[in-house]
Length: 383
Ligand SMILES: *Cc1c(COP(=O)(O)O)cnc(C)c1O
Image (tube, helix red, strand yellow):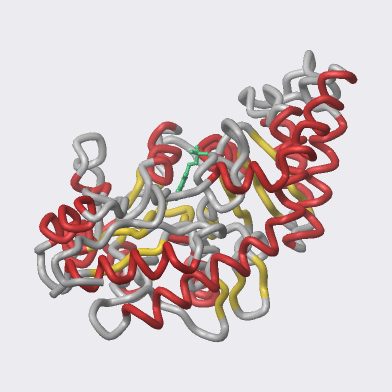
């Protein structure tokens, strides 16, 4: 290539390529949808039960309660745990709004915790500081919601032991990490209760909204099945507790059954893509945390700049035809809706990260030549 020839992408680069996945299993999805249209059981049809059983065998969780979204999964799980107005729940500030929203919508108090700059997950020393801050405010601390940000499981060993000392429960917001593993446990097995999302852009996405809750606790599972259908007792006209309309559509379950079949292979592909990015970028920019004990689900591949020159880098990449995204441009404790809730005394890490991180295209169908092009464009933008 002569030096005055501008680098051109080999194709239109997708940030997440759902079309390539659909093309791969289009016949199977068409068949699955036709089956549902033929039997007509649109609400809680046989595919919902089948998908829940498939997820139990995939995750190793004893119970899977499918539901209407990742946000509803959080709200339903908090309701099942008995969270009351005025209770305090510790949440990381560097996450999607739903994590704190689910707490606040029940009248409980999200207490914001800073994250670890190395892995973007809740920081243990900040959690201890937030615990003290909350104690001084005299709010009753009941639990912790950890988020597996960008697909990397949080440090549940440490979180579970801190929670046990303080009499708190631990919930995993695993909206981004289904398919992840850590210390020989799957996502879905690491906390008292785990929630996930099937929003189309998540690692396992449907063609609309959907979510699920995992637990080994029989009592919690029974409560969740009741809460999902208006707090039903023996039937839906017997109301024994407050609930919601939180069901997963049969059509989405039918799609998800087919997608789950290829999901283990897609997780392997995502890890191959991430490893190749790491190999070719780690000498010029901070690449994501990765070790032998952990499998990340790579919902996002996120880089961290050392200086606040992000807009320049993003503009260069845009000009080269490389799509990027910023997760998250403002931590929750600085958002209009959440700024009056308590937070740990020092929130400096997530405040800095919100100005220095950006994410590259990441999906299982990223072709090697396209990835090489993206890597060249990033290296060029950084020099
Ligand atoms: C996507 C997401 C949610 C919400 O899931 P929805 O299905 O969109 O409601 C919650 N928490 C985190 C961390 C997420 O990334």
